[in-house]
Image 1 (cartoon, rainbow, N blue to C red):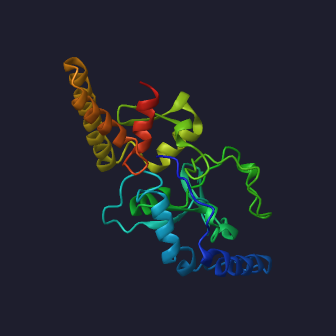
Image 2: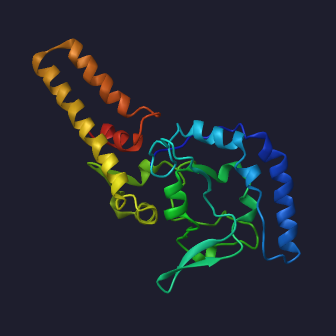
Image 3: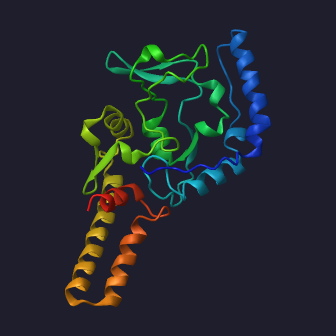
Length: 247
């Protein structure tokens, strides 16, 4: 997971149709309506999707893999229809969810279909459930236990033991995010990170050889290859930023 830098240039459809739909949802809830409907053609309209993908450098906001043919999905960080909490050892869906944020640019991310439908789903645990105030549409007192890469730097919560993600100091938010998204349990994801880690080790070897040989040209190549791994457009940037900051 890496920091997502979202622009303040909000797609127009969210500030026009999105605002109108938000107001309608609020009125629906006030009138006692139980079953809420959401317009995917607005929050997942092409301009919204394309801007999210571009600003996330064509990578999933959660696992940081390239999409590579995966169409992905517009993800609501705070679930719109209902949120799942752990109850008696099982997930329990509570409704309504954060319906007033369904068309809010700050609540939208783009994730791969696996993160979206298999793992994140409607999970949104809080440190203190008593501070969840859906009735007042107030999130100011919430202490979310999932990292929002658009408003927080995942590097504050994660460290990497080679290609394995670990919560810094065992912090609860880091551990919960790793557990909910299964960032160390999905073999395809772990193997992809491991492959990049092996690439990183090879670049370090090239640098060492270049230094031993005092070969300026080879040294420049090695440094370029290492730098390319921490580029914002690179896959698993967060992992290599950590390595770079802890050499």
